[in-house]
Length: 435
Ligand SMILES: [Zn+2]
Image (tube, rainbow, N blue to C red; front, side, top):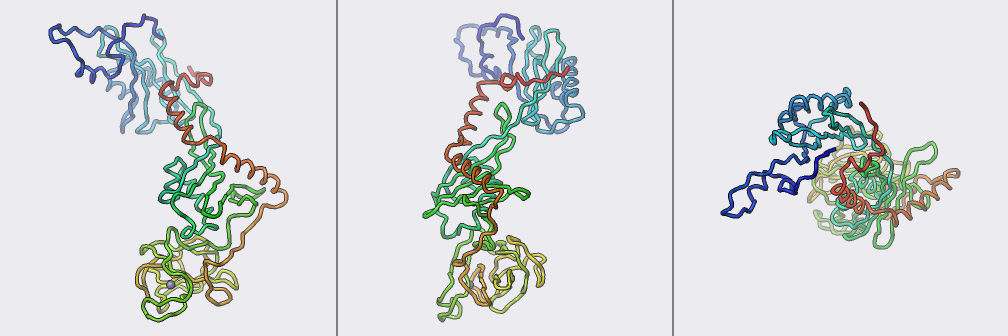
């Protein structure tokens, strides 16, 4: 690009000559030498502001009119009707004019509105500009995030580099099997396997879809595997090929704490010993309560000591009941059908209650039983023609959860690469030139 001999190294080589000047140490007696005129190229990163155009932006940094018109025109010919978003980053390579060091021309301008697409305008030796669109191939990459629970499982995963959506999916898949109150402890290790989408020069365009996950509890490890049966939708399965979805949630609330179990106890208000016919979960007033299973509302309203109360009938034999609500969920009234996980009300302290909590009952054959000791049926198993495909996939995911590259290592490597290599050098083989 530049055929002139390289000038000697000056302060300008160390960037930001304006800031640097103030700190320059000069011999006191020597007269201040005038800076040698430098027309060394330098890089500049600008952000497109509201109401900005490329031409206006270049005018603001005193690019000569003819240059900025050409650059803006060339870029627009690439973008066609598309417009750049406010906040878009514009990378410039500038060069001061030899005779006017305060004015710089544009050697190149590049903008990458999507990770897979970069638009570059480059100055040619004759002073005209070339425009090119560079397409980066996007392909999937399987990575692993391994960490331990410190606070919530979701936050621990996000801190370790997993996207929040993937962690939520992981937690939902675990929720059918894991009793979060009793089994989840600080420091427990987990691994999630993610499929990211990455450009050929290492930019992540999708942070990762959950393929599989593993949570190591005190006495057992729970593994979930994403699988799509033929003609069906994606779901999560255990390594034996059983769907994680069960007919009932383990607990009808997120992040709750059990304050009273099923069984005989001294009643906190009545003061005598009686059967506590449900389980109490402490939670702040207003915490959403979820339908433990799909079914029909058979009661919704005030019910004596139960306060605001909802009862759901799931099968002829099984019903669940929820008491002391502050408020009943929208649209919840007798006769209405509900789906598993739907919000049916909010935690409160109505009726005979000493503080905000959910009193949860599980009824079998008309009698209250301990909800926490129920064994719930798995909903489905990977069948005949899917079985071999599932086994192969499960084997692959289980080994990748141990061996796949760690997402954090790849991110570190990409960051290192970025500082040593300009994006233009890394994908020159895939340039599509438009003129
Ligand atoms: Zn209770």
